[in-house]
Figure 1 (tube, rainbow over the protein chains, first blue to last red):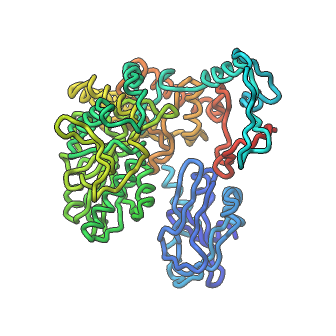
Figure 2: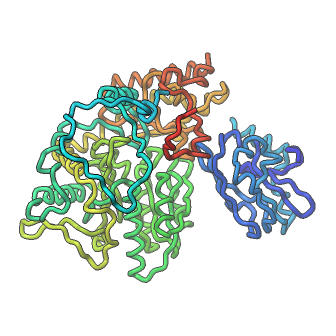
Amino acid sequence: MFPEECKYTKEHEWVFVEGDTAVIGISDYATGELGDIVYIELPDEGSQVHQMDPIGTIEAVKTVAELFSPVTGEIVEVNEAIIANPEIVNKDPYEEGWFIKVKLTDPEELDVLFSHEEYAEFLGEQEE
Amino acid sequence: MSATIFEKGKNGKSHSYLPPHDCPLEKLDLPGRRKSALDLPVIGEQDLIRHYVELASKNYHIDKGMYPLGSCTMKYNPVVNEELARLEGFNGLHPLQDEEDVQGALELMYNLQEALCEICGMSAFTLQPAAGAHGELAGMMIARDYFRDRRENRKTVLVPDSAHGTNPASVVTCGFTPRTVPSNEQGLIDPAVLERETGPDTAVLMLTLPNTLGLFERDIARVVEIVHRAGALVYMDGANMNALLGIVKPGEIGMDIMHLNLHKTFSTPHGGGGPGAGPVGVRAPLEDYLPVPRVVKEKERFSLRQRADKSIGRVHPWYGNFNVFVKAYAYIRTLGAAGLREVAENAILNANYLMKKISQWYYLKYPGPCMHEFVVSGKNLKDYGVRTTDVAKRLLDYGLHAPTVYFPLIVEEALMIEPVETEKKETLDRFAAVMERIAEEARENPSLLLEAPLTTPVRRLDEAAAARSPELCWSGEERK
């Protein structure tokens, strides 16, 4: 997936929608801010998540951050590879480093998320 | 990196000044006797001493230089306190000694409890917990049993995002669920937000005062009122008590349970030089829940009360770290009430002086006045490709200990600086001058910071590898 085709949250998650499934990860801005990620905790497959609820923990060398679900639905797949090797997220946040796949309950929710352009603008404001 | 004692002692030569043994060797023949050789290092006495002296000389400590590690209160530890803790009558005691033979030690513990009650405005203290987080857990257990006895099923503990990082961990360990209360733009608890978060499920508000931004909660009276009205308790993490000594008594502003860190506020050595002590104080309705044994005084005689129906039980084998009590008690009695207040006033003065200077070159998100510490951010240096980590590493090259970094989490690229009251103005000025110099270097020659430290025994360590796959045991294998 290309970063340009994703939707984004204020908490720096990205969502890429394929049919009724949303693939979710964190942006390269987020990995840059976090630094080396050392531990990731994610909910189990089959759990229900709600839009913008904290659903997991990302632990880096210098800090700890929460993962928020950008959408509502059921988790259909968890990326076990990043739990075993969290450095994958630092190396490749948009491909190999995805976090979870969620079966969407309400695709209209996606409208409240940032487009790639809006997200870039948001990051610009953050830096000021 | 220098060789370990195991590497130096591999196939080494030993020499001893002791005469050879002159009696027959008895071979132990016990079940479970190890079959393989123990493979301890073999090394001569002189080489052994040199090894450890060399390691010790690489150490950085409060006796070597300023140690502005935010939240840790790295103040001077008066030598006289060490002398007193070494007195044979204290140091030679055994915890199983008869109470009649240790009346002096029990009296000291009792008097220390009383002194802490007076300083904090609490009804009773236990000295048992061995450190701050241990005190937090004991305090949470007291709250848990208190609500259990009242048949109230309260599960949530509110923790402001400006609290110490150990707070939510203690909450979870005790079976409660922590809930974060976000602070407002001034870095303080917003009573309106707190009001919204507080409900019938709230057991405790666990706050750090002053908070980790070094700020005193200006709305504390309102905060306490909201929590108490909901039938919940207020727990104060008193690790930052250095800012309040002689000025604020937590018990008088509504704190129900609190802990102190004797090794911070009351000047007993810590940070590799421990051990610590994290006494817990409570207001009267909670006194019966304190851990046993309790040091009590009846008709001029001191004893350890072993049983109390409502007590949470034992939290430490024997009774805590006794020598720490001796040092803390000596500190309190040496300074007296006026002296303790002066400690807090000077800690606050030093922090504000340094904050004013350093905020010329580093970003200050929450302008003070601060209490005993303050938090600046290195984010203004990001344009030069430099981060707070790099500033911290560069400080080592100037022979200074770095402040606490990347905490609290609510300040991006945080540098948390606690100068403490025992540093003189010249030392603060030197630290400020170094911080200014580093900010200049970041602009003019950022590679100096990115490559730092250049002068330390080891350069940058691989912190990610250490966290991802730590090797916690010496395997006996030589390093490659």
